[in-house]
Length: 74
Image (tube, rainbow, N blue to C red; front, side):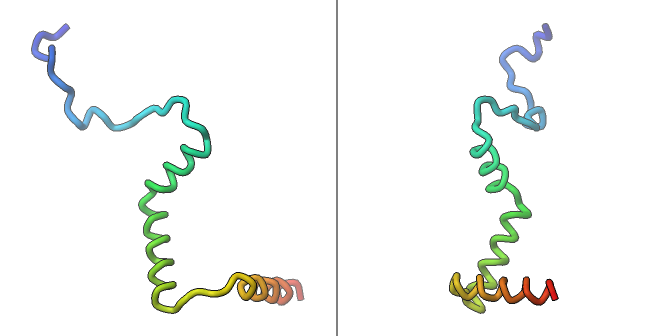
């Protein structure tokens, strides 16, 4: 054992990964999504678009998607 390292904490660069134990799959998936920078930026972009141009009522969206599917079939 190196006496110079007794009682000293390893540098922060030492802690690069964690191994989760006993975390349900759903919770792990939620954590990964919530902490994904790309996902966060997509949510922020979508919210900004909603804030500038407004939203759409659910049944209107369904109608649009159904029309789009019909056009793709023909």
